[in-house]
Every structure is written in C-alpha cells, then in structure tokens.
Length: 188
Image 1: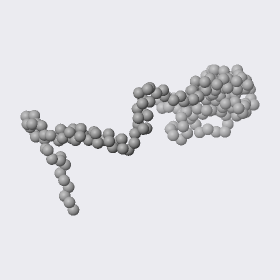
Image 2: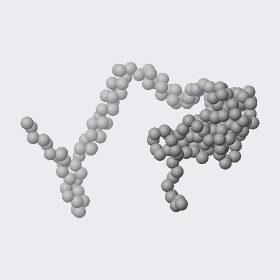
Image 3: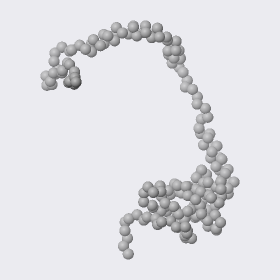
Image 4: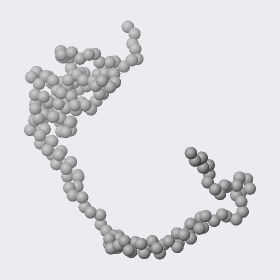
C-alpha cells in the first residue's frame, strides 16, 4: 500500500456517528474561557473547538460519553473539506451550569471594568482657549481687514516667484522653457 503526500479530505458526512472517540485527551470545561462555552440550553450545548476555533455542538447528551460533533476546518464551500483533528473528542464535565453562569458573569464584569464609561473632554491650555475665543469673536469685516493687510505681502511673494533668475540653467542641462510645458490644443 503506497502512502501519498496529499492532505486527507473528509468524507461526506452521514447521519450515523462513530462510537469511537478521538485519541486526544478530553476537553475539560473548566480550562476553557467561559465566553467559549454556551450552556444556556444544556441539551444543545456548544463550545469553541480548541484547534479550529469554530463553534461546535456537543453530541451524546443522553449517553454516557459526550463528544464534539465531527466537523471540518475552515468555511463551508470555500476550500477543500479537511476534518478537524478534534472531531469526536470527549468532553469532561468538571463544571456545573451554575458554576459556568457565575464564571461568565465574573468575566463580563471584569471586561466591562476595563473600558471607560464616560468620554472625558480634552483639557484646554490657556493659549488654546484664547485662540478659540478669538476665532469665535471674528466677524466678516475683521476677516476682510486681515486679508487686506496680508495682500501686499502675497503680491510681493508672487512677484519674486515670477522673476527669471539671472543667467541660464547649469551648463550641462538644456535651458528651461519659460512658457507652458504642454502644447495648446487646437480649437475646433
């Protein structure tokens, strides 16, 4: 019998379940995060698989041995179906439902205490406060007067920018064209 290097793919799932459990050690509920277990309806208990991190139902609630339902890794219909190695893994009930509820409420309280309840406004410095007050006090007339005061300096800067420097460009380069670089399109 030849061994191939191809990944094993899962067979089409049937209604019947195997009685044989996984050889991996049993999952203890007390070792999982309380938020990764859902025991609200004990006959339809669900938990997060440790290997593929998907929510998986627990089967065999009426029998002696409870196991994870056989499941695949990844999303359905996206890639090749690969069976998770934690399929048919036994579950060890070392926690009661009231203990799970208490652990879940404790985890929620701890998480909510880490988040601030109110948003505090940013503290203003006296300079920022003065700036904001002066902006609020400005009117259209004061803004026009400020712009009129700045216009001569803007015009002087524009004139300096338009001035052609004395001499030509460096000796190793061509002369820079003074008119537009793009040719004008013909009028239709």
